[in-house]
Length: 210
Length: 210
Image (cartoon, rainbow over all chains, first blue to last red; front, side, top):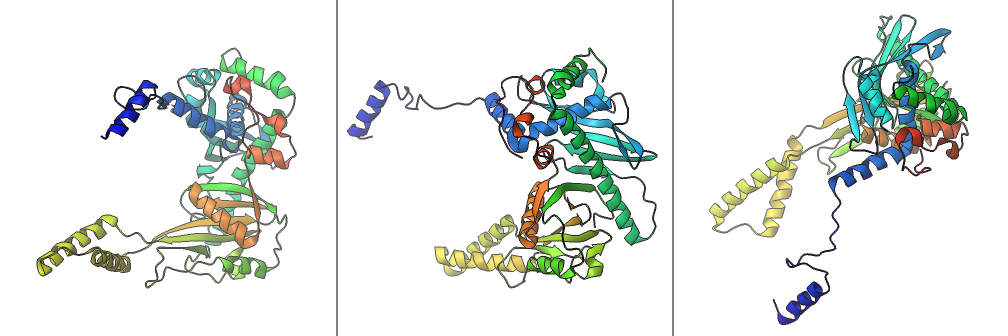
């Protein structure tokens, strides 16, 4: 090291810009938890994902009693959460929680996590309309239909089977749209903050049935 | 063809513009699809990837006849991508082998230009022997309801199909998610800020758009 460079280094050290090891003292160290929280926050805000999470959380609450939530061709449609449910949140030490088990979505543990500020991010739903049943995975960000199970096809001809399968897929998509419309009607109204949210909080805290 | 068998996984969109596609005009669909029709990778060319629209029942065909396209109220077609992958490890091994043989033969290591020339020749040989990986994503456009489904679980692939659809047909597609549906229904952004009581305190409202 030349004399000039050594003098510069000494000056940097004297100004407190570097430590005894010559490394910058101003180096930014973001801890892992902070990075994780930033990512969780970005995920929540991207494409207004919070609306999808609030929708799925509202639906979990509304579906627990097992009453029909809408009608299709004059027949009642019931919705049931089944299997794996993923919760995500911003605050506290847990940013994601996955609950597995046939009865997991309505379990005390999931409700407790919801009460702590996590929301449902993805879930598997079962729609029952008359004797027919659909099952599909839904995620809060895109509301894409994933790995859906459609009712048994009734037709034999290949062309008809394509049409029937597409009809059933569209019916499933229609159920999701109908639920979104119902949710938005409540969500944009005054009753959301005054009635729905307090009732959901009571349900999460185990003070009220869904 | 996922429409008939396999996993039922799809992304859902509303065709916002044009609100009604001219269903009686086969030429409208044919012309649009032909602008982005699939062309296989040429053996002697340089491209490693080919993509474009194909018929739903024959993924090698790009005639888009009325029979192939129209199925009741729906227009069905598919987006095909072929990708040639040349193993970097294999190319490196072959180059090392060639360099050793060159050194034995000439009593010196190959120069930079010689190596680069040989590298291109090896790449060309491996490319000629490689078989492309084909992926097909089905598209169903219901002209009665104006809903469009892209049958794929990959967001990257969905994005590519959407870009091609928008370019080929001049479509404006809106994802069927709460944020976008609320905007379509004229619900104001202020009414849909994150609910503090559910997602926890400390989240500033009004971020992110659908």
